[in-house]
Image 1 (cartoon, rainbow over the protein chains, first blue to last red):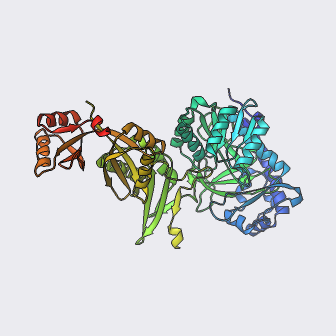
Image 2: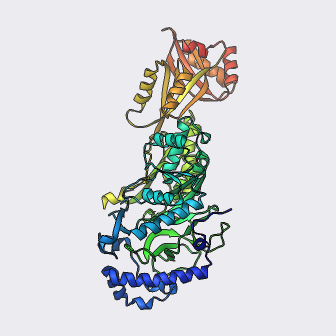
Image 3: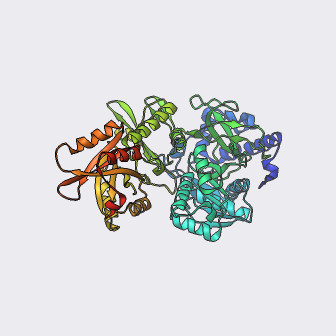
Length: 435
Length: 143
């Protein structure tokens, strides 16, 4: 039996949702036009007036916002409320260039935490659960978002933040944590550490994990689920729209329901900006229709993804987004081929290697090189050189089959690649250093 | 009689990798009787015969090394011309496929010992026994 945090919204027929979205959108466009000079100028340039937006069907008329706009407008240029009405600032991790700061009114915090509460309930959370939040706390939205959602649901909340893994496991055992919230790479590390400490999932009470803030694969999901004996649910969000909780997975685990009463999604052709029909792969664009302080309209996420309104067995009618295939920022173009680190991760896990790896791209004599360091799996280690070299070759071939380009695979010692407690650094593109 | 055992360790082809393994063995009071290192540009396989294989395995695994223990044939032969050739002839006549071998100091300065890695230990061991070659047991190597 499925549980909902806000059944009326989560299971609302699409016609009603569209009406709600349209009302909110019209009011939001007016709010932004009146209060955000930066966006007013963009609308004026495009010749769009607030009256031109009468429903969600008119959304495509609005100009896009990009990360570059956020940089130009830093820090206050996109603020739609006086600072005296704002109560919080969060900021991006700055993994891809300059930081972005987002502002929140009390209502913005409220709606964000409610979005996270929907995610926790969808993962089976109730007020009887002990929710261990091992996302970083601070400017990063992961910790504060899930912390707030957990409070709303009424879980006993353990605000651990990330790091000190043995202590995480110690608390998990002593206090009987049932839900773990962190990045998937940290969840994998916690699983690894648990087994290293000579413990098994029987020694802990976890039943579910809510993992996000970085791309991860189905193979990684299976491996985390096995090592911690839990159900692992994906959660998606970005600081620009609020933080985690823009979308979340339900029991079906086949994509994330978007909280579209707050965030209207669109999929566009990243080249032309044209809106694409449901089911096609393109760049995900969000319009915040309820946020007060930092309401981004048609914000281009750079995440490549597919939307689907197919009926979900959980009963929710909220539109679903497939796991992003990768952020266009993460995409590497190597010898003209588009490569996502997640593709390499898929092959590694399939072949029995750890999801800790390091991709190094460089340019030697005008040719791109792809080097992948992979940790040796102790179970597969052999004293015979022939066997080891065959393993390296087999892995390189499997990656070549997936990507279409030849990598150089380097087997390295177990645990020699730095573990991440937050967002994992898996790619070093040395070509950028030469530019 | 128990066949002699070899412990192999995956090491990165970077400075100080061997040092790390040796320091662990030193701290645990383990004596290395025989050692060989095979390497590629990325990694090496350190193969050793030690006086306490179980302990060495435990210590290295605890330190997160990739480790494997295999049975090997260890022989000791006189330190004079033609002796290794005689051993290889015996194995060759029986069609035993040799993966690798390496030498180590013998029990006296008149003898030399070898670790021989084959797939079919029993087959190799029987052939060597028949040919009159002295084999070292786990017991011999742990003294």
